[in-house]
Image (cartoon, rainbow, N blue to C red; front, side, top):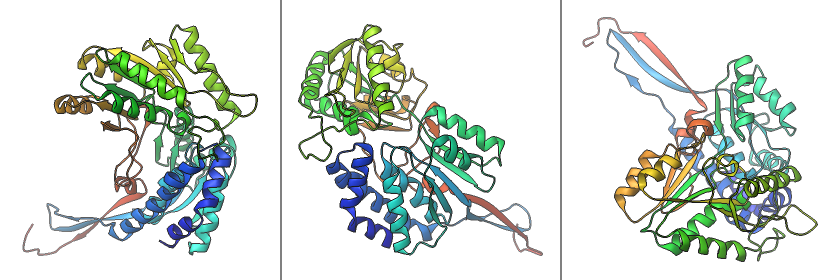
Amino acid sequence: MKFADLIEENIEEIASLDAINGGKLFSLCKLIDIPAASMALRYYAGAADKIHGTVLKLSKGLQGYTLREPIGVVGAIIPWNFPTIMFFMKVAPALAAGCTIVVKPAEQTPLSALYYAHLAKLAGVPDGVLNVVNGYGETAGAAISSHMDIDKVSFTGSTEVGRKIMVAAATSNLKPVSLELGGKSPLLIFDDADVDEAANIAFNGMFFNKGEICVASSRVYVQEGIYDKIVDKLVEKAKALVVGDPFDPQVNQGPQTDKKQFEKILSYIEHGKREGATLLTGGKHIGQKGYYIQPTIFADVKDDMIIAKNEIFGPVMSLMKFKTMEEGIKRANNTTYGLAAGVITKNLNVANTVSRSVRAGVVWINCYTVFDMDCPYGGYKMSGFGRDYGLDALNQYLQIKSVVTPIHDSPWH
């Protein structure tokens, strides 16, 4: 609780660090990211004294119960798109479970994690409980994954790196791993949707945080009856988006995180043009200085195009048309990923059918990118396994131990 208080007292400075490091909007860091840190700490602080096992009804003359014990030393490897949120998504439940933790922040955004380590010390967290180790994935990340004294690794990042972590865990001490990996999330908009509301949800779902978000609604499927109207609204919104200095309160989108990501996004845009998708708006970088990219929307995208299959992790939306619910579901599931999905409709039956048919870890109905501390978050398929947030997240950092004692001359069996 003291740690959470200190974060709130230093919100300006921490928000500045994430904005400078990652090109994130300073205003949104203050409004969303930093408050989410203190919320996570308070949520799991409340859970810390409510972790308990169960009494077992054993079939013989035995008494049995389970203990839920801390798994031990946790290694957390976190990405650069939400440095603060990811830090506490791992740290808060691990500490509540009674574990110690070593966090490796992304090399692109190392600053706020160091500041949090400093605040933890001021809050009275004992030395050695919360540790921050900066470095590159291939050195510091690899050391955590293969370390014989680290008992668990929790990773958020790319599928490619997730595979490497699993291999390292398997060839070292067989430590359990939880992975929250990439996504290529579908959003299905049905004919009965309110056009303005649907366009708003789709746009924010894709272009929030400059498209650098694992759950981005990057594949937008619109039923043919309202397709043209939705397209017009989305293009209008993209053209009105202000790209620039993330410290300017008038700006809606800052620069991409680094040169590598900037160039990767631009190369995907070129792929889209080459493969025959229609570029409706955007598609270029802005200015001669900084990693600024115009919000980009492609139409006439086919499901087998690279821009429809690969995670771009930038402000690039693919628009597709569909006829029936069955077609929409089939195409939504035609991906190796399964992190998130969305459905916009006024029809309860359609909403229920789609949400139960789409293979994804979170499905948003008539909303998108809505997170809550109590709502478990993670993927299906190649988007990984394990859950962050909610009480389910605690289970990733706990072992179950069964304790059995004989009862001699028990009056009941």
